[in-house]
Amino acid sequence: MQDSMYHIVLRTSALTLALVLLFVSGVVSPVTEQLAMETERYLASAVGMYASVEPNEFNQITAALTARETDLNAREAALKERELSTGLADAATADYTTYILSVILFVLLVLIVLNYILDFVRATRRTGVKVYGQVA
Image 1 (spheres, rainbow, N blue to C red):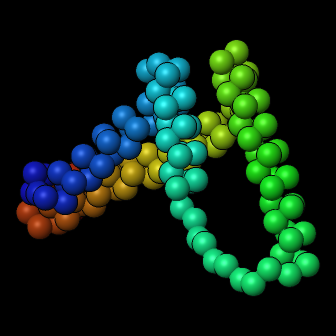
Image 2: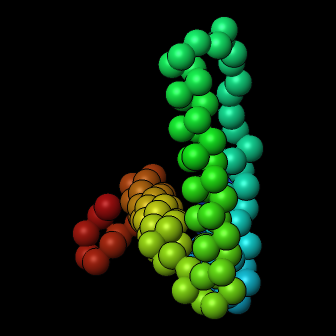
Image 3: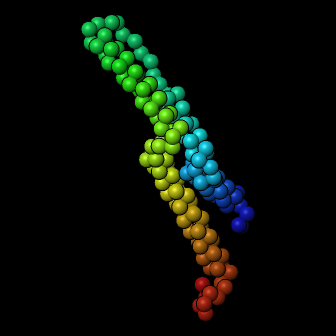
């Protein structure tokens, strides 16, 4: 019963999540934390949508604002790259990701413990084994 497919998947997912948490938090190496952050940024920038309309006054103003925003984003990226090279990276994003993964790992561990407790209770009821002097 303890080697069922459900238990195997549950243990594997908990182990995988724990390993991901170690790599994303930077415990193994600071390079893994930087790699995780850059991967998140790359995947976030890969998603997009394109549309076009006929040019008018509002579109031209919007295009100018978008060009300014693109320039500012490029300057911000250069600044962040400089911060990363000096070790002054924004730790808030890394802390948030680590916190979320920690919460998910904790929930998985609680579910695993709860599952084993319920399996034990069901098995003792089925067999009628005495637990602490009482028939379960």
